[in-house]
Image (cartoon, helix red, strand yellow):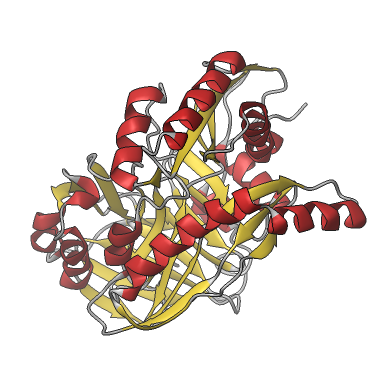
Length: 436
């Protein structure tokens, strides 16, 4: 019977000591058959437990349980040797891989803080269930030799659950105060201090009973099937924005900036997206993001395709301007986590000049973003991986959910319009968290 690790003691080490700790672990990957241990295994349930990890992009998914090894990054992404240490850790353990596809074998999954210099952690799960784009599934277990196991089928079992049916919603910062901050930021941009600043808001939802992450994730996936759905314990969301994907030497990034509402009427939506494409403000905001992402990738790519004009990325309630950037790396030594460190934070979530914008946000925003707008994703022992920008996200603990949304402020931003845009973006999470 396929088993899952329950007895190994989680190891917590710095990333630099990771290879030493991993040398005593064994990673075994086997294909899962059809039936209760394969085709019928619900990865949203596996990855939606309070202590679980999930990454799902369309048909591809990784769901992790338990901790074989936790890699602590004391200086976050500011440590230039972190990516190499993480890769060395994944490659140091003994591996038996009967599947051999991207995402198989030992993987790290993580949501990293928006503050790139803040302490962070990546997890190598004790058990990872994977599914590729063809629907084939696999199981990777990581632990010391001779570890004791339990039946895999228990992974997808969720506790009895009655969802909350009464809610209170509070905006910690009053609308008038936040709009005044937008106005002050516009003045800073016009004075030449910034080209763009991305201001975020938080709202808090309290239910009359605890939330179940798997329940929220299931609704997010149903509402936004094209988004990257993720969970790392208490932090979850559905992001439309791909920070970076690395498969061998092929890299892709899909920055988004510029937003308009969707009405559901095809003619009205065509008119709205036409205005979005024709807006000098929105096009300039988008260009700032694309230029910086492309510059960071050109330094490590032998070829890079950057479309001259953005296209429309349509979601359930909004449309964005997006530019799909694709390239080929110069060599095999640049990993997905290396690319994350090069790109984060982009002007789409911080502003530009980046360092000055981040310092400004720290002074005026009024709350700690935590992992909101940080990188979230995975990397395997080949250095392949996918990382999203953790927007459309929430921190869920018991009966309380903190939801986040941000908007780009430029010289001609209007405070009322920017407030309305945050409300529109918050609807993505509210539709999954609040069930009237």
